[in-house]
Length: 159
Length: 458
Ligand SMILES: Cc1cc2nc3c(=O)[nH]c(=O)nc-3n(C[C@H](O)[C@H](O)[C@H](O)COP(=O)(O)O)c2cc1C
Ligand code: FES
Image (cartoon, rainbow over all chains, first blue to last red; front, side, top):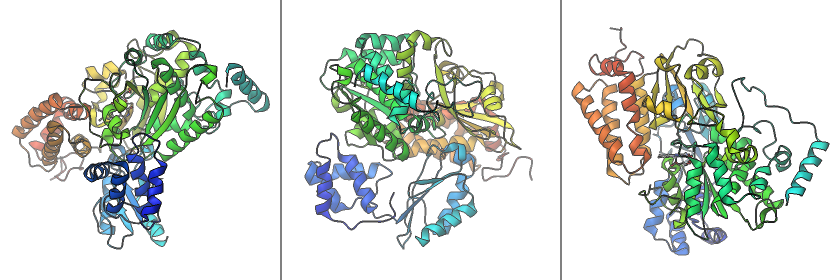
């Protein structure tokens, strides 16, 4: 969601874990925090969460790998997604995704070697009346054409 | 906060502010109950919500007994808008019947069915109405805590809900001893993390508990053993958005709207190849014709109507033979489809039915939680078999295998995802058998979507 990544600082993250002390079932909110800060959930952060919440590493890794918005490996500075929901699919999102994959030289789910971009899977973001849609770092762009997609990528690269 | 203060806030606001302006672009066929405040009030202003009769429903409910509240919902014949249409009053009655100090109300705002976007608009447009509906539900079943599970793809809905909660807490509408009664209620928002299965009620509870979203075995049902193993009711956003109006106007009033077995209004989301797209709220029982040609304004330039997909990857397809069909819970089931949560996607002559059901199966295969074998393995195998059809690599014998496996997956899967995953195949077989024959026997796709010769070409 962010286009800046923080350095891993376990002491700081410990405070974040503590701030969720009073809620029941804090694991997923905590994983969201890690994902937002680092663009993935580093193994040392998983270990820390495990120690603090007294949940096994395996369980935490299982949860982190279950949800498509959590990543266990570093992701790019920018997350680009082409919606492959039904209406977007019927309105040509397949071509957009192919174009994007070709342009960045990676497949959906992968990250460019310069660490700039990750293509994230997106399946309907509730903007179907303006299909086809893409998302960049959580922001939705409606009725996108291939030319616009190219422009948006250039805009991103400049940031 | 109390009734007198609430009325005073309302009066002060109305005296000092211009009148509310009716929402624009409301089609004459519409009747707005769930969307009564949508694009009328500022969704971030609790005062505007109160001025437009907000929090009068909970105020009235608190003068009734929990049983009376549930009775009113039962009389309304309100059925859950999350897809299955389970009677809401009955669900609440079950939960009231189980004793516990910790009961929960969950609002299901995971809205994952592709082509569906009414819940997003309802929450973004009128968040307080959902807070109020949850409070009434909490009072009715004896719960003091509510969770709203919002998909992370809807950050604006989540932030508006959070503001609504904060503002209601500040005015002491939420919190302890609401309206000077013994009733206390708090609400917490939880974000999803990109898993469609977490819209399934028991998977959603697992997710709130901090686990992978694996569906649970039922029974026990959530009304008995739900979130954190306590009695829980879970309702869809739109279901909850009906509650305050029902309490204010009475169940009797509500039961007279819509059709006999599907009462009230339904908010639909229309997308695809019609001229107009978006959300609209009509009494249950609108025909497909009216959806496409009146509300939708007809097909887009150059488009001819071919099919309407309802119920998404768990639903089916309607054709021009069904234009007079009314859309409600039961009549679509009779046709082998479902209304689902109300997403209607209109396809035209350029859309391939086989490609679309393959797309649905891919979605189901990717989103299966993997707990039960028929769904985990079956959806992937079915996807590969449909993929073969679109590549001209299938025989009629394979089609028999697809039917056989589809039956097995739908009858043996643990939860609704697997049980309904083959539904689009059955529906397409009934209404578009000729397209299967084109792809399988003639190795052609008349729309040109699939990578094989176009029918009529060389
Ligand atoms: C795979 C799957 C996904 C579902 N997704 C949703 C959803 O996103 N929103 C929803 O309200 N119900 C969803 N449901 C239905 C819920 O399990 C449940 O029936 C519903 O939240 C109950 O609320 P209601 O009685 O108000 O309809 C889903 C069901 C299944 C099987
Ligand atoms: S299908 Fe793409 S936003 Fe709904």
